[in-house]
Amino acid sequence: MARVKLVRIAHARSGDKGDTSNVGLIALKPEYYPLLAEKVTAERVKEHFAGICLGKVQRFELPNLGALNFLLHESLDGGGTLSLKADAQGKTYSAALLRMEIDVPNDLL
Image (cartoon, rainbow, N blue to C red):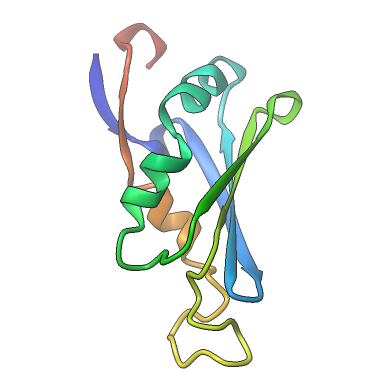
């Protein structure tokens, strides 16, 4: 097993939906998706965004796309039109998620 950042096996996109950040995590190869589905849980994402995401985290699986979608509720300080945050639309949240580390079997790398 190797401990790796998600950026080695996935890419991501993010944006805002009011006070909720929407983060999509997409496997770089089809064989990576089952690992992402197993290791990148709503609980792990909530922990990874501690202090940023004040609400719940919801996870949606899109196996036909090799992707997971996360909604981080109460994470944008009111959203783009209300927030004074530097990133009121949550555009950097995808890069932040890609810094999460998981254990990956060596034969997959």
